[in-house]
Length: 290
Image (cartoon, rainbow, N blue to C red):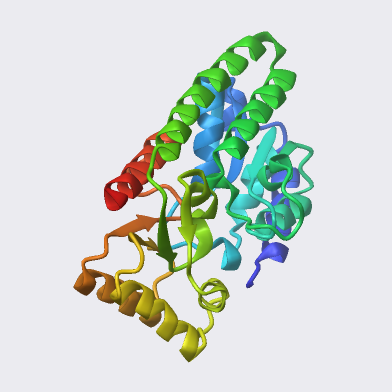
């Protein structure tokens, strides 16, 4: 992963020596400065914090890859001013933890993977695990309440309302009929589990795609057979991990008439609400199985 940490550290030094008694935007408007690694966790923090927070997410674009994110000087500035930071952990967005360490921020940290309770080495895409998302929302409310005790009841109420909406998504997912699917990458594993859908993708295929290497020829052939032979109810495609192999797989699904369900690692352009995003993905899964 290419990193610009030395540049980021320099930005912190400039901020400390050059800004004197200046105030940040967050301080000026009375809002709590929150920084998230991606707009997924940023959207959760925004839902809980409401009008009391100013949330900035370092990764907003679908084309950005947390595994190879190049830090920018302004990232360090945001982290230096932050009171709370939220990131995924589990090896997914290591750049963020390194940048926060380099910035020397004393902000409270929420690491979603740690909150999840999953043991080390499990699938790191925990924003697709709905129980983890509700735990993170509760943790955000608790930390914001500690920073801003006068509004702790508001943050707790916001988290409760948000989690009720997430529970509705979980109920919809659980109602999806069981079936087998192929996934180009195990990004949505936890959501598929919640829906009772079994990912039958050969492990050698999905592991290679996730590591951005070429899958073994035999694994590609086996995966193609599952799709072209209509042995699955849907192809779950991470549309942020496109390659020649995944393109061939989606073409095979189209030819065979196997529904393609698109998933992603960040909120789509124009979407700011986590629950809205996840509801659409659950609906797409339900429609494919039906």
